[in-house]
Image 1 (cartoon, one colour):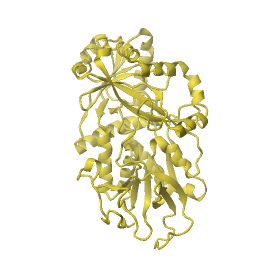
Image 2 (spheres, rainbow, N blue to C red):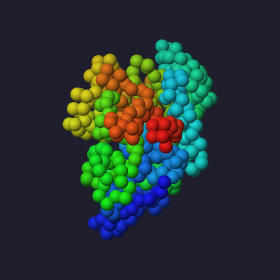
Image 3 (cartoon, rainbow, N blue to C red):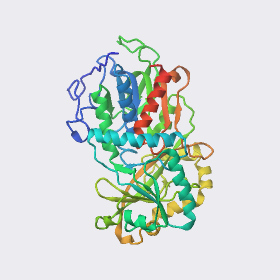
Image 4 (cartoon, rainbow, N blue to C red):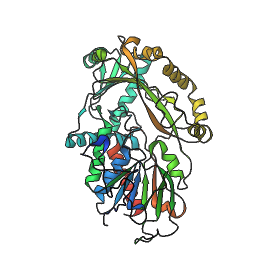
Length: 463
């Protein structure tokens, strides 16, 4: 199919103008600004594509890249509500390349994480993207944690994680001189990378293959066209109408959404079941002062408690040399609420009325109270960190950044840990694929996930 995009002169007076990408880089001409000549038909004030992908995070970008590489004859557009790409979950990611040790053997999460980590390393090597394979220790500091640690080690072996070994106190000291522990799992395959840099490279690949990225395009409505657009020569070839908050339109044959924190709302626009709902959890990090960074060499994690949904506070080195400590896991009162007092009435009402949060709270009440306490009092977090590195004091840390995790939650209060695909209803249903949940570690698994999404697209749309 012919890959074309026509333009209409707008108030800036520059028809067909393609602006530079993130931070004004001339290397990335793929950002077509939604508020200025983002690609509109001269007669219909809209653009038409064979396939449109909604969501400019790492999963959406990886999927757009994979789709256009398999189907180079298709015209494919990607819509992002922000002015730049990968600003939310991708841009607030801890940066860890996970090994795949935590997940249930033979599960999709385990398979995709192990495969995805290998693909990320391969991709970074090919593109010259810097990363560090600094490894990770999962450390038991109490005797009662050792059986759980050994079970986790066996799980990692079943998942095919490379290089795993159980080590004792003396070997822990060799890997992490300031870390105390009785026993640990050494995961040498774990690494760190800047995932936003990876995501922007995916976008570059997508553009190089002929794809189009439209930013500042916040989707407000998705519907089937009632009639052929005025002046259109394509008739009803592009029957799906995607309308943004400014009233501008994009038309397409097929639609894929990878909307992260808004995946439930975007899918509900096309008539999908409201379950599962997205509940935002904020993770606050602390920073180890630079003069104390020698205390941590690689990733140091606690032994996870299967009764609770999160991995616990850990030590994470970053590509810039800083050390992040955390995160906690507390309810966010806004879907993009990176600060404790960020608040959205609509987001809070959705959490209370639509989700199963109340049931989740009752199931994990003590855990939730502990997380809230640590969020308020640094001394509580420091006390936990001192179990691993006793030398750390409250004077060695600063408050750091935060991220918000899009956690899918069903009405029974259960965290949805697997992928959820959905379509619309009626005529539109056969033309839409919603990725309702791409669970952590989605960044590590992004290249593997994108392959699975494209397989699903091909099967549903018979491309």
